[in-house]
Image 1: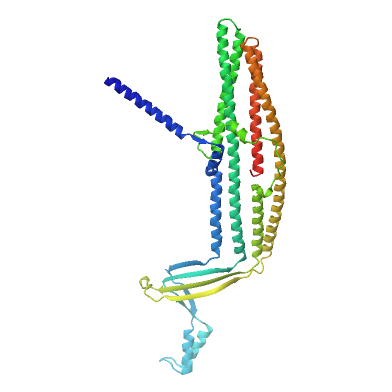
Image 2: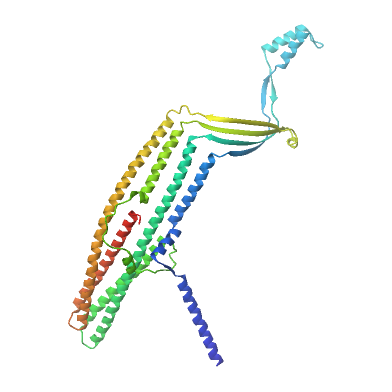
Length: 477
């Protein structure tokens, strides 16, 4: 009894362990509806995160530009040690002055008389001598603090407007990134659903063909059917099996594409909670009504309008370079000097205080500024042409997209009807074959027709959904 109890406890422990692992594996699977997948991608997509960083940079740029017009304070500390004090050659003005004083006042030292002094003075004037003199001290230090305030600068005023417009441009770029990611995720989501639905139909077809193949094999052993029919049915089963394997690989690729678009690690498992029937029911796949394009709501056109504003502000900034710039400033400075470093901070420090206004007036720049202004004006004209071109292109793109959608809708409806007919023909042929009144060749042909029509149907459905996505994007829906 004790041995049996231990065995039961061991088996129960193993069972609980495997159940816990299955639960953990299930919990690790992330499940998404289409809306949840779009929201997840908007939060985690690298392109969206990059655009969000650009907005933060633009906000910092606004403050950087604003700070240019606010008071600026800076301090400077300097220390110099003169290893060799600069030397200057000075003219000998002392000797002529002393000799002149002697001649004027008649004060002569012993051994020197008036005639000798006059001769020496004449010689000094005819051949002036120089002597070396050193100016400065070995140790010099100073500190100062300067305050400046911009009073007027045209480029600064325009720069403030441009920085705010650039922030608007960054926000629009974020909106475009979110829109692009949203529609990319939608396309990938649809692709996975269609591939899985195609795989489900192939699985169902393979189950039927495999069952019939096994039945025919038994009948062949009993001599009721020919070996040719058996071989033909095995070929049919192998073809469907190959199609199933190919679809499995397509599903794997489509899921990786979806995870890539959403910003999920490719190794993680995901599960889609919506079915293809849900998408078809919610997609409103009906003929289009006459909807025109509202350019003001189109993000590409909005970005171009903002670019036009930026170019115009740049033109205005270049024009302001012809205006004067005024800056007020004030500086307080103290300097200390000594031949001994130890006495540098004990000696007296001498202050200097300066306040003033700087007025910079542009007068002539050899037409350099004029050329820059003309270039900026041409850039404004250029972006206007581009904006008109984009407007025309968007309207043309909408018309083409409507035509593509209408063609895709017609193709979808045709293949949808064909699929119903092909399935009926295939089932009728299958029934006839089971009853012994149909041939394996007929069954093979109807099966191939059914699978081909099924592939065409799913391809037409994907084309229709993608065309709908493109129109929704153009109409900002």
